[in-house]
Image 1: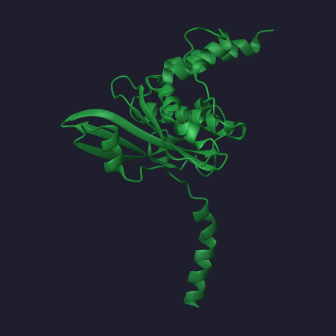
Image 2: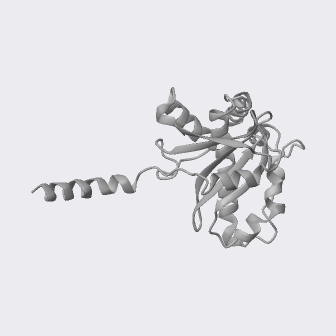
Image 3: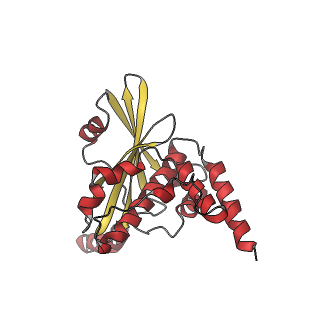
Length: 231
């Protein structure tokens, strides 16, 4: 009877476990972080979970609003754990690294960014997992280098320009172009990459930068709402 009860318990839990939120971590942090930062002497991993943060549910709704669409119930659930890597040279923090899962055409895409602790700008974008017919083109150095120097402010400014001043010369995000060699069937993975990049920066803003870019979002939202009520 005990064995039957245990088996029934496992079967009952199985669907719940299969739907458990899935985080995104580096496969080999020591190696990967040293590759990104050769001067690294140490690093720290901090697991961030929205349910354990003050006003976590509000932060989750804010993430959804700022990403700009529904969140995936498996890879982007409220319970999803996130891992923030802090990289040090001696006592000085020289970088942050963070990754997210986003649904792609051939399965989940794992997009990581490294960011400057002072400016919050991207210093590198890389894929840990990418199964796509356009994988080679998306991983190409010239494709990924487009993102270097961008920050979350640039994405929020893009939203503002789209609503208030389309085609503005200062819209850096509008200049991002998919690689010329990208197959048509892989265009969805380019869009997923942009979404993953934006999501990374939003979470970094929450976890590491005290939401310093929020005024840019509020300005963009005001412009969008103004456009919606205009005749």
